[in-house]
Length: 200
Ligand code: ADP
Ligand code: 5GP
Image (cartoon, rainbow, N blue to C red; front, side):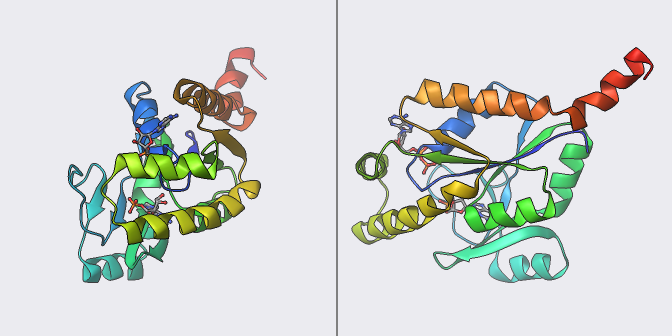
C-alpha cells in the first residue's frame, strides 16, 4: 500500500467537518471516504459527496456481501465504510481520510494497523455545547443526546495515535497537516521510492 489511511473522530460539534473541509480543499492527495448511511440527508448534504444515502435493505445487502470494511448502528441508523474504495485509494498512492466514530476507528486499526487515528477534542465541554447550539438544526432532545454521546466518545480519545484540541481553528488545522505530513514520511512508505536512487 502506497497511501495512508487516516481516521478522524470527534464528538459532534468539535469542528471535525470544518477542519476536514479545509484539509480537503488544500490537499489533492487527500481523498474523503464517502460512507454509506441509512439516515436521511440533512439540508445541504449532497448524495455521493457527504454520504451515499441508501435504503435500509440496500445497506444490509451491501454488508452481507462483504462490501463494507466496518459498519455501526447509531441513533437508529446504519453507517459503513466501503471496502473497495479504501483499498483502491491507497493502492493508487492517495491518502484515504475516514470520518468515523470510535467503534469504526477501532475496527479500522484492527484491520489496518498502519492506519493513523486522530481524535479532535473541543477546548471544553461548555464550548462543545456552545458550538452545537450555534450550528443549529438540532431539537433540544437531539442536542442532549449528542452531548451525552460526545462525553462517551471523549473517553475513547486516549487510545488514538494523535489528539488535536480544536481551540484556535488555524492552529488545529496546522496540527492536522503536520500529522498528515508525518504519516506520509513513514519509512515504510518512503523507503521503496528512495532505495533505488541509492542503489541499496
Ligand atoms: P462537527 O463536524 O465536529 O460536528 P462542525 O465542523 O460542524 O462540527 O462545527 C460545529 C460549529 O463550531 C460550527 O458552527 C463551526 O463553524 C464552529 N467551529 C468549528 N471550529 C471552531 C473553532 N475552532 N472555533 C470556534 N468555532 C468553531
Ligand atoms: P452524522 O450523522 O452526524 O453525519 O454522523 C454521526 C457519526 O457517524 C459521526 O461521529 C461520524 O464520524 C460517524 N460516521 C460517519 N460515517 C461512518 C462510517 O462509515 N462508519 C462509522 N463507524 N462511523 C461513521
